[in-house]
Structure formats: C-alpha cells, structure tokens
Length: 240
Image (tube, rainbow, N blue to C red):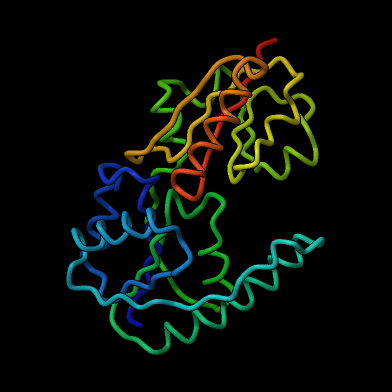
C-alpha cells in the first residue's frame, strides 16, 4: 500500500472524533475491518465510516480467536498476535492506495494494533483518539489526577490478581467487566465508574466504593442482559 493509517476514533460518541481522524478517514481508500466487535460497536463504527469515508472499500480481515482459557496469559496473547499478523499481512498485500485500521479510543492505550503492525514490519502513521478514560473523567466532571499526584492505568485482571498497589492513590482500571473493584472493597476508596462511556447507552455511578459496589454490580448485570456485552472503565481514588 502507499500508506497505512491507524486512526483512533474515540470512545463511542460520534462527536468525540478529532479533526485529525476525520481528515485521515477522508484520505482512506481501504478500511480494514476487524470483524470481532459487538453489533452495537459495529453499527457505530460503520456510521462513522459512512459519514467520513463513504468511498472507501471495506475489507473484512478474518482473525484467529484468542485462547482466553489459557493459563499462560502472556504466551496466549503472543500466539494470538502472531496469527493476527499473518492475516493482516495477507490483507495489506492484496490492496493498494491508503489503508486504515480504526481503533476505538486511542491506539496507544491497551490496544494491539500498533504491536501487530510492528510485528509485520509495516510503515504506518498513528492518529490519536479520545480514550475511554478521558471520556469517563469528562462525564464525571473530574480531573484524572489530583495536585502533585500520579495515576496508574491498569487492567481488571491485574487488580484481581494483585490487589491495591502499595503507595498508589489513583488507579484507572480498564478491560474489566467482572467487578475487579470487589477485590479492594475494604480499602478506603472512591470510585468513578462508567460503561459504554460516550455512547447513547452511557451509564455512570460514583461514590464510596463500599457503598456503591452493589449498585454497580446490579447495573452491570442489567446492562449485560440488555445489550449482550459490557465495556466499563473506572477510576479508583484513595480517600485517606
């Protein structure tokens, strides 16, 4: 291809796509679609493409499934990415012009698009997007960090396995959906929680973790029943 673009398309709100992303989409001849998202996300992504890249060809890239039951997490991810690299290489080689991979949120934050393209040795340009953490803080009208503070961005799996990190005062948690905050419910923490952040279905809850955890659990269960999937993000903040 003449050029490859990795475009961050925001957390779900169509208004949260940047001018840079709009301009990049307008240049795309081919949109490489990773057909593994939920119906809701697929619909939202397609609406963005129809609006900003109506003449681009849509190429569905068939991907291997990750072994989520594997006990060796890092090895399973490595094998999965190797399989993805092979299918991506085949798709890229079969087309010309300007190609684009669309990434929800920001490509630099808990997304493997950059890593897979690096693995196949592709040249590409990254257009940043608005992350779910940014959208969460905006929705709750809070700053991510406090004065002279620091924030650790981690995953639900790490929080479940390791508990509250020593010396940390702010923890932004992604890729959970299984209530990892329960593992630290006895800590003096506030939580700012959101699901489908930025989308029409957005759900928000906040308060003392020990007091709102049950409400969050119930909200997650109800939302998963209604939509068939859940994607949440939250900020945990020490109060003492």
